[in-house]
Image (tube, rainbow, N blue to C red; front, side, top):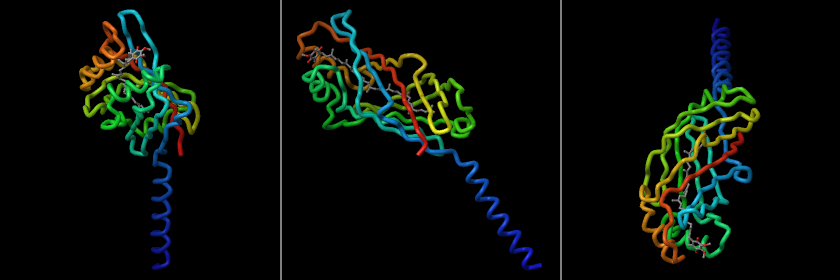
Length: 198
Ligand code: UQ8
């Protein structure tokens, strides 16, 4: 009888650990080589230019805590002196080296998503940029490319307004140093993020 009880306990423990292994959602990390994040500037009313960050990192935990880190020193505008001015006059990277985006996603829904399928998720994220945290409500397109790879894209451009992040003075400084009449404070952002399970 005692032997039978011991067997029952062992089976219970084995069952619990197996079901945990099945239920645990995988963790993902950002594939920085295959991911991109573009931002758009407008100067002299009609001159619109694409720029991007070369250094991104990020993760999605097994609990659905998603994070994107943007290395602000890695802003690439195609002009070296302009890159340096963005780092020093705009982002002030000595004090604010990174921008971070955090949000919660439903890890189980993500895990259950079929390979090849596309979901649109309405999310509320927090962007911490230049010492200011502000919410972003937007739709994200989530595509499950394989059992180990997710693609996350913005469904529509996200408009960052420089003043919301204490960056208007920096935009004015860029305008003055480059002797321009106007640089827009409104900056559209677009991204494609690839995540792989570890
Ligand atoms: C499964 C699941 C759902 C997972 C979720 C995964 C996840 C983490 C998702 C993230 C979701 C999300 C909501 C992400 C949000 C991403 C965003 C919005 C990030 C923000 C990125 C960012 C920091 C953007 C930059 C913002 C900003 C205010 C930029 C300012 C740009 C400007 C105005 C640049 C001006 C450039 C310019 C015209 C300079 C003038 C100039 C100079 C100075 C110069 O020296 C020069 O050369 C001499 C010129 O001539 C060439 C110049 O023109």
